[in-house]
Image (cartoon, rainbow, N blue to C red; front, top):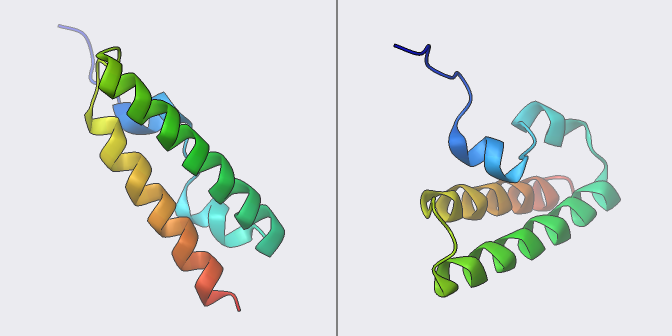
Length: 77
């Protein structure tokens, strides 16, 4: 039997940054990261609607990531 992977499929599929990495970013970098994450969510949603997305759970992870970035943006005011 093959060994289990330690990273989640959602993180591997969309290249999400960890919370500690997000804490290190300044406001402009967070805004840039948020824009990029929203663009990626749009692409994933289109793929899901076209039936091309094999892992629909990735959408939930991407939405959560966007919420985390938004939280850091509002808390760093």
